[in-house]
Length: 283
Ligand code: PXL
Image 1 (cartoon, rainbow, N blue to C red):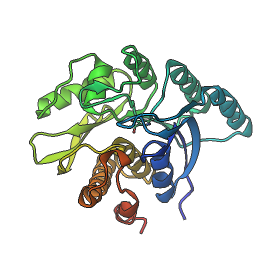
Image 2: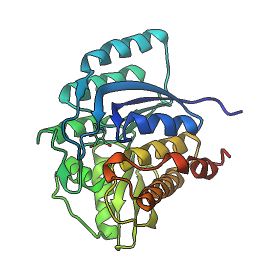
Image 3: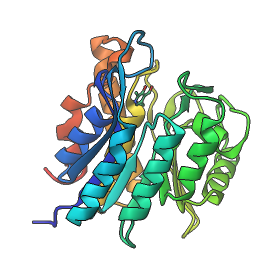
């Protein structure tokens, strides 16, 4: 039996609408990785397309939880952050990294803040600068192309892209600090969609594509990020992990599209978990 690895997942819990912790916890655990959760807020639903959602901010709990885990001597193989609601939360999470980073800990940051060329409505225009500072501390970041543009201070380009353009973006993102970049929402033609990976240590750039399914589905970034981290912790390379995560996310979107579910309700990743585990060679 392999040694049990442990992740600290720092995201909100949106009760309905499958994203953040309600996605990270099942996917990472199913892949044989212990998942410790630090909930940053409790919402009735995510903020994408619903109105009237509740939002219980848990910023005050982050320091005491950090201190308690430190006292217990808990160690993490990876720290995975996603949606963070404020500058205070960004600072508290930076402190969490300082407390728990060892030479073997992967700091994995999904700079959740924007999509389709737009900053999510709940963030101020200053927020991307704060997120950039958090990314400076990361080993791996996984922005989409809108988040990438905000992080490097460029205008959003809706695509289709060229390899030259994508490679320029990957290198500018790595100049922020992280040695590994996984860029999502990459496409060179209308038929395929996927991710690009860059490892600044080796200079290697690779792509993982699947057939594009029309429409915009909520929570797919979190499904992708959770699957990617789970694959990395199961000792797959960066490129292989991105390919596994693209396949899993696409499979979940395909099932959702087939059943005609409201796109705000999240994707059917649950019924793609067996395929995902086979891809990870766990089944
Ligand atoms: O999936 C990203 C996400 C996570 N958490 C909350 C969100 C979003 C995206 O809109 O609103 C609360």
